[in-house]
Image 1: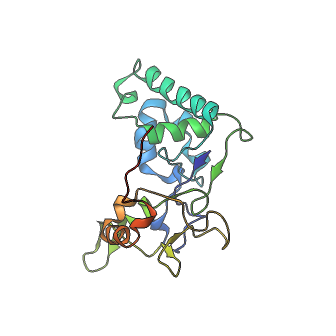
Image 2: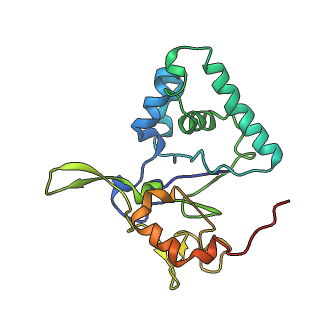
Length: 205
């Protein structure tokens, strides 16, 4: 199972710059077209599809083994090709997306994607850190620790914005890329340390 990053169809604000789809991503094309060519990458055919996060793939043992086998085999094959196909020109994130949309991980009935704001993992990198146009400076400027796309309950817990109240994942069970929100997430951790830390020793087996 693949978890989507925030896309145009799942963003919670009207500003289009707060989300990006894979076919419109310059980063995706920069890390795939030099190796595979624009015809195979075919970004125009997936212009409105979401970016999948390579750090949040979920599956059973067999599924993860298949996923990693396909991805690692692709990197081994690319190492035998031109310099444009080798790391750091190709990376896990963009190579994985290329392989997914090409169907190398299996047919749709075998692989699923979870929309951003649902499920067991909430990726907050793009909502927290992006480039915004600063009117006073008349230019784009990178900012981090944004909070305007985050949803909290009365106890300050971070919610999945597209889950219904009462859902097992209404409160986001896992946050991914939380370090990009550090101005507000660090104090949040201190207030809610009972959620992720313990004072007594853990007996490891």
